[in-house]
Image 1 (tube, rainbow, N blue to C red):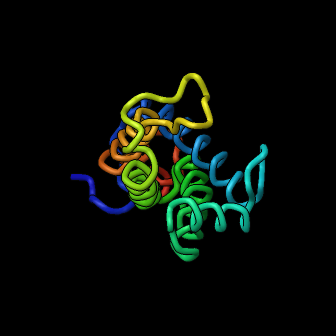
Image 2: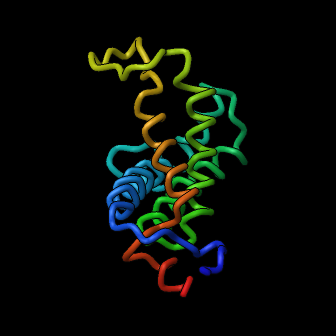
Image 3: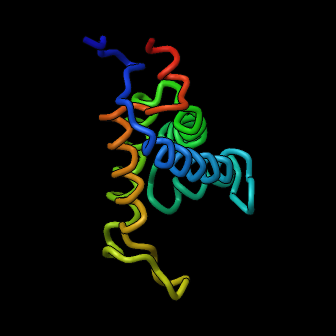
Length: 148
């Protein structure tokens, strides 16, 4: 019987696609927030925006930025995947509640600055994170190697 621990994972090749997509998306968004990559606000800009727009205090904003970037990296590598997925799921839960829920379900396809995005994308990311939380990283992961 396989020992169940933080590194345990099911034997599944399909999880690599969820891991790579989820990891890349969160690393990109975390990089925008932390480092200003790809037109992002960067560290100070993100802190100011989160506080003035949504009333999210600086320590929680920093926690979200670090979780997005380094949690995304961990998921991408399949290293401490369950822990990283838990953090990413929490970030998505807060984003759904604090930012997107009031805008309904669908994305703002018109890109109108007066309309925000609904929860559609966030729900997909949340589902991906929860899948990894329950299943582990799958094949081609650091966790699979460490779990032996």
